[in-house]
Image (cartoon, rainbow, N blue to C red):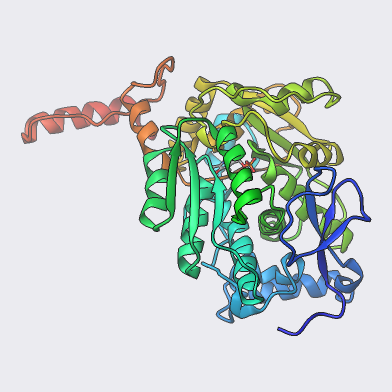
Length: 450
Ligand SMILES: *Cc1c(COP(=O)(O)O)cnc(C)c1O
């Protein structure tokens, strides 16, 4: 690829706009340790009007022309403009369903308009695909430009590693993943195993894995694929753009999103920033970041008006992908929440399990992190913070099929300390017509619709 005269996007320190790096430099943090962000040349992007951007994005939805049919790459100019299309590693991520949760919203919460952005309906089953397609594509581009990268690596609570392994395998790039042993679901563990990554199960938690991966990135030249690497955020920010596009460019009143390492809530806000800057929308949603009570350092900071932040040791939670006590993107997340009139809410283990089970009974099949968001939403509606006639979108972060082990336990009433109020275990009977019929009629009579 020919060298650009002026780059259309670059890394920039979130604290010092003067500190910049080109996107093909291998750099994750600013000199003072601040995170970097990808900044786009808005002057360049303003050469198209808001209506032209909307029309372009629409024309590319599900297009066959490589790589624009992907929900991420359909917005390539806003994401990673200076990359050769041939180096894009895409699995047609994004463009996920915005589920009209009519029955759950109206019946369970009394909300007139609830939508659930099903980010788990994607190649590896979580929103991590949105960011990983960008990161792995950049690695492919870097390799082609002659950079020495022996492998890409991440610490993970399960979903980042699945995405990294899949995209790397598709691109033929070695991948290394560090998982906290025994703390990810079976489905999450088997994904990088099956995709041929080098899988380490370490006797620590996520934060401990993060320490290791930072060291191998620093000392051994392995490319860091965690969301500390701001390339990931560029892909993940498309979720907000998709949501608004799916609402015919009307901005919802509230967006509720679960948060752990806090890259995703930062990304959500970044997508809205660009839409506002480029005139595609003229108002902001309010953002709710939802945390598990067992892993709630952001919630604790919010309680003190974000004046202090203290990392904690996160305790085990059903929402295992957000069992994080020392979130990497804390600074970006607090900034995002302050700019989007944000709220942080938390949910206990039984609130998570029950919100999830009730949502499942209206046709959803949610991951526990979505359960955290739904439980937080319920509290805010009950407390009158969210009005019943406001439009709410919940970001569902992973597919429930990744978490069948805990759903099985819920319905068998085997989850410790949880009542399983909505357990629906299979009815075991001998295969005799009369017996089955009697029980069937009794069940229909007793229960009706789920
Ligand atoms: C990674 C992940 C989260 C949390 O996202 P952060 O960017 O770490 O806050 C939430 N839910 C699921 C399913 C995830 O995989």
